[in-house]
Length: 257
DNA sequence: ATGGCCAGCATCGCTGGA
Image (cartoon, rainbow, N blue to C red):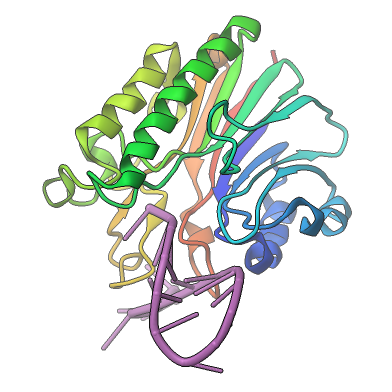
């Protein structure tokens, strides 16, 4: 089972690129973030024509997440929202095959010390509680999404420059480690990876051609999914060309259980 | 080649993203 996470930065704008990418890559499940669409505007028709059934939890302008499931698979027990943070649409989950898939768009945080930063840390803590409850019911959990946290120095193009800044402050990294401590492993780090592999590059300052990026989009695995994971890759090519998202898609492949 | 912000909302500049 191929599972992809991709912050598309507006599904309205990115739908043609998403459809083109799906046609080539054919993942089984896709976790989308920043759809920025109310649910009644979600492009179900186009995605169904592409062979995917979508479950969306969106809002206009900001946030919005969705799960796409390739036709032939079934999404069961779809749920959305994070307790205590229902005002922002950042979480959707479903069970596919024998795996509970949790798709998250972690708050950006804007800047260290801001109100939004406090909101981000509180959200991350609530997310840990939610994951703990999920793990009680599901031995196999995939926690995927735009986490807006670079967990280690090697996930940052210039860790000295970024140290203490948003996405790479110690409290954020601690929040990420708290998720791992629940029993998750970062699928990307199960494999040898090229150095300087990132998932996000600022639109400004020639960041992408200079490869000044961050690895902030992640697929975390619980239980025996670690043994079942056969690859995790970031498709840097999807950041090229006309009207790219500023994030590249991350894909993990799981062997059948 | 991959290239000096982008998207949305509602204008005619702002907010938010990361």
